Length: 66
Image 1: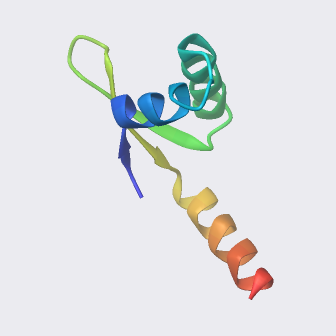
Image 2 (image 1 turned 30 degrees about the vertical axis):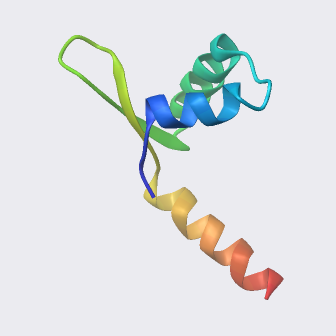
């Protein structure tokens, strides 16, 4: 379920979302333990992934919609 940070930002920006808002939102989600952001040794965001707890939550929500 991991996605490159660049691809995620690009997908959202092409839909009118401000790039700065994406980064701020992702940092907030990371602080809440909902996503992990893999970073390069220089600190640049490289990949974003849901935490295991949130993957399980998504799976349970999806199952309840079936």
